[in-house]
Length: 257
Image 1 (cartoon, rainbow, N blue to C red):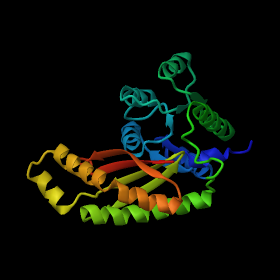
Image 2: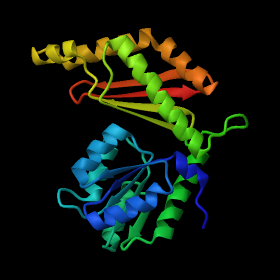
Image 3: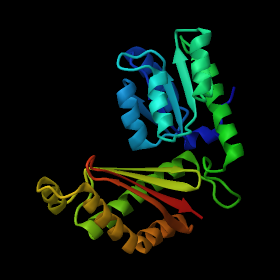
């Protein structure tokens, strides 16, 4: 079965506590999807989900800290409808019924059949595309090859790093850029300035830092929109700003027009 090119624009969170299985499936996924995020248990899976905002979750059922179902209950309770594939050595009707209640799209019995996993991923992407067109970055005038996508993501990262230093006085320890569908997602970590760090240590509210940063970004958004837009020869519009100063983490979304 041929891989769908659409998978190259998809971000997958894989939660598995068993190291050998995790490494094997990671190798398989890295050759087929745009980005793989790994988590070793349920708590780590929740943390990575909040930070990375994956398009699809693949999770083991039985894990030491919490089950895959318990993890998904927490994620679902926060309003997420992210498609999920459950993997497990168990096969019982009660477990399968629980996953149906949580709107789990697929249930695979271990050892994982790689072809079956690929089919599940392809089916989910096709279903998502029928609901919205946000997974693909393709139209009649704008088609990204894997090489071009990687090149653009690197250049956008450099552009955003320079912009960040200009408007706040400091860059970020980590900047990740991911183009998916008609969106550009930028993730930032450890980018608080010395003044912001000092304010937090002195008891300043996290929300105060977050409000000020959002105002700075909104007041200068035309600059970064134009810079990225000129690079891609498309109109770019700021869509969403998420700032979590306590976790020293930010997520910025842009629409590609």
